[in-house]
Image (cartoon, rainbow, N blue to C red):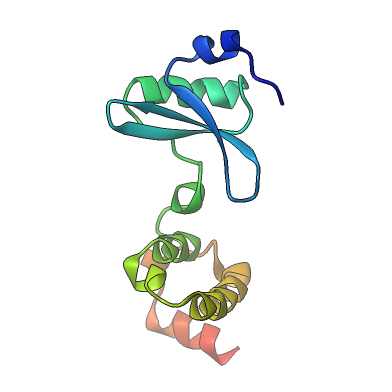
Length: 127
């Protein structure tokens, strides 16, 4: 995908990069503030995220914990994946734990943690 200078000047502060999978993505950076803009340059969502970034706000719904329902099992798992408690584990241990958590998330990821009671956990574990 070729980028011309006109595109770069159209959104000052927006720069592109390739993620670890080789996918082209965009981010906004200015005065120490950074926000993800996504990968669809010029799309409606990109423009909204860019406008939010200009106002110093990070847009919800981009990656990890921001992409899931707050206070759900999915949210807790996404936060844990970014925590030092998880990141300090060896990569092989992370892989094993992630496999266990992802199986659990498939069944229960949308459930709100705030409403979980002891009996709910016991029912889940008995399955």
